[in-house]
Figure 1 (cartoon, helix red, strand yellow):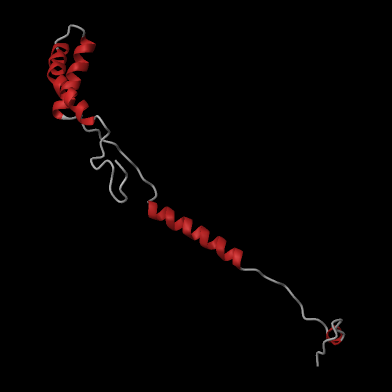
Figure 2 (cartoon, one colour; figure 1 turned 90 degrees about the vertical axis):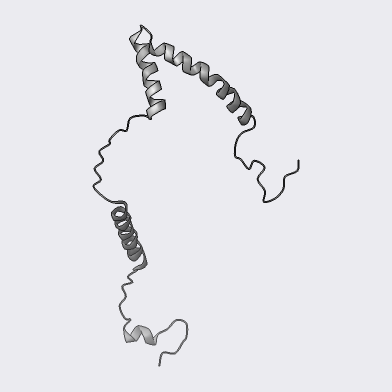
Length: 118
């Protein structure tokens, strides 16, 4: 099939074989649940705990975790500070000072180019 400009060759965005794989996994799900239930009844506490955790995570969702974040500077404050630094650098780069003193009249009268300064 030739490529058509402006049209996706994969409109679903799924890899080839995805539907077949999904069907196979769906067929395996009842056996996996049965096995997980048996593992939850294991005499080995580590195995039983892992199985129970998996069952609860999949049925109730994983437990939420609280995270404390202390932000000292907002992003806009950091951007403003960076812009001020850049602005100052640009101002310094543009301000070129040329120190000059006027020539004495005697030197102005003698111009090696031959131009008249009258």
